[in-house]
Image 1: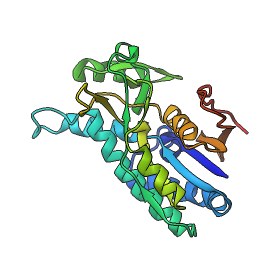
Image 2: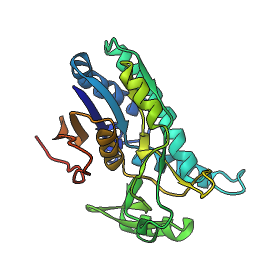
Image 3: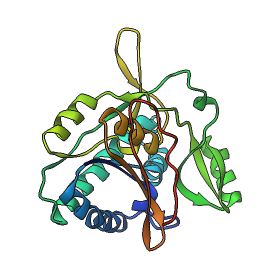
Image 4: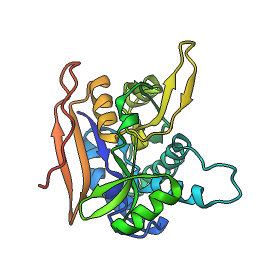
Length: 253
């Protein structure tokens, strides 16, 4: 079977953990070990989240006084794709996955008039108590929202319309390559009337991008994995026909 796997960014950096590379690498190693038996029997396409990671890079960029302006979110999403994709490809091999694996830096086309730009809902970065979050929001111009008892930065999360590199992904997958793509939901980009692409300030939901991938690649299953203590949360969906599936939910097994 062809299986599209959506691996949550919070599964790679659990809530309130220090965003150290070694901690994230350990979680990637655990995820790779869990995915290795699945890869032995099925053809995998792996899509990962980046909410905690892109938030860390954004905070670092905003604190860098050598920059005339912080790096935009689309660039930071691309950076997290390279970082997490590198870890995943390496650790999958270390876990004994025999098939070739490759990370494809992916752009996701979005609609510039998507109402999400006026209603930021995507959590990124660390969590704070309300007072600290409000102070950061006032100083850095953030939008913030409650995430359970804590508060986090929220950014626009427009709906994905498709991956620019989908035919490259399809060719690799058809050739038996385990493909890591659509990381962080894909680098959000808009296409001009002339066909030119430009990045935008947003972070696309990786679950929706994974669902688009599952439909386009005619996958047999879509698995959504996130941060549940002592186990992975898995939601399985059949990718049937061309109709859009409902937004993947998170559940505890």
